Amino acid sequence: MQDAEKGGRRRREAPKIGEDSDYDLGVFGWLLIIFAFIVTVLTLPLSICLCLKIVQEYERAIIFRLGRILKGGAKGPGLFFVLPCTDNIVIVDMRTITFDIPPQEILTKDSVTVYVDGVVYYRIQNAVLAVANITNAHLATRLLAQTTLRNVLGTKNLSQILSDREEIAHSMQCTLDEATDDWGIMVERVEIKDVKLPIQLQRAMAAEAEATREARAKVIAAEGEMNASRALKEASMVITESPAALQLRYLQTLTTIAAEKNSTIVFPLPIDMLQSMMRMKQ
Image (cartoon, rainbow, N blue to C red; front, side, top):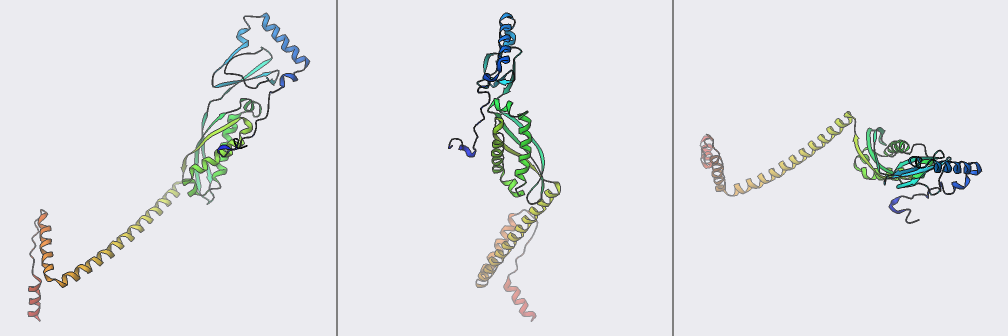
């Protein structure tokens, strides 16, 4: 049980199909098989072309003899023998298959309409179940993936869909893997490709983000003005205590202006002279 639950997924034991079907053919069925075998022997070597089949390394062959799966399940890879007229072969590809989930229009939990698409990676793990338990395993898996995507995202908010893609993909993988066990399919990976928002919602979110940034900029500018006013206040107190500091400030300003290549002429006027002129007017 611990091995079956490894990776957060619990896989059920596959039903035993084709274990003892050779013994249920009946007398007439065995007579047909014997007759097909005799015909094959009598028409050698021409019958070899119909009796010998080859499947690739990534394929498995399901043999139906008189409508029943042969004992042992899937055959291959390699060369095997079949009887003409009585045997029917179904070839199953065991490689990983990838398909895109078409964009689905989804109404989120907070009543926002979004378009979401994804990609699913799966492969057939049990060829017998994929042939005997369902008509079209690939089509059923694709339809189930679309439905699962809508059901899972319908319980999420917009912020969760945009930020928790990995968690949503893992939840979809577990749901799909559990549902496709009876079909002999194992879902290996699910990914959310893109989340498309309506244009009006994009504009609203952009306006909200811009307003938030402007508000932060104003707060920072106000804090800078406050710090600058405090520094100017402290500087004025220092200059008031030392009048010579003001003259030094004049000289520093002249040096800064002279460093720039311009035609501005600055003539510093001592504050003491201005104060004496103001007293004479009074």
